[in-house]
Image (cartoon, rainbow, N blue to C red; front, side, top):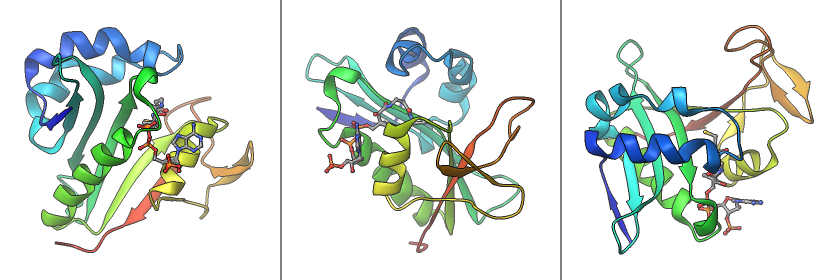
Length: 162
Ligand SMILES: CC(C)(COP(=O)(O)OP(=O)(O)OC[C@H]1O[C@@H](n2cnc3c(N)ncnc32)[C@H](O)[C@@H]1OP(=O)(O)O)[C@@H](O)C(=O)NCCC(=O)NCCS
C-alpha cells in the first residue's frame, strides 16, 4: 500500500472506477482531467502493492479564501473499506492544508448517505447548521446548494494551522 500525490495518468483509470465506488451515483464528471493536471500536489491517491488505485482524495486550498481548503471528492474501493484508507487519505490532505495555512476544510456530502456522513463525523467534521440549512434525512443540509434539487450537507472541520 502506497500513498502518493496523483499524476495526470491516474485520471483515466480512476474516472472509470468512480461511479462504481460511489454505488452507482454518477460522479465521474466531478473527476475530470483538470483535477489531476492542476491540483495534484494537494490531492492524494492510495494504491495497492500491484500499483492499482484503491482510493483518492482530491482537494485544494481556496485561491480566494486562503483560510479555507476544500475537499472536492474522496473515494475508496469498496473491497478495501473500513481499513483506515479513507482516514489516511483525508488526514494527509488535512495536514497539507494546515501546513499551507488553512483554518478550516469543507467537504460536501449527499443527504441520506449514511456512510460518508459517519465518515466525516468520525474525522471531526460537523455539518453546517447555520442560516439556509434544513434538516434533510436527519442531518442539517442546504437545499439546492449546488443547483435545483442538488441538496448538500456542507461539512466543516476546523484546523490548527501548521
Ligand atoms: C466514505 C469512504 C471514503 C470511507 O472510506 P474508508 O476507507 O472505508 O474509511 P475508514 O476505514 O478510514 O473509516 C474511518 C472511520 O469512518 C467511519 N466509517 C467509515 N465507514 C463507515 C461505515 N460503513 N459505517 C459507519 N462508520 C463508518 C468509522 O468511524 C471509521 O472508523 P473505524 O473503522 O475505526 O470505526 C468510503 O466509504 C467511500 O468511498 N464511500 C463512497 C464515496 C463517498 O461517499 N465519498 C464521500 C463524499 S465525497
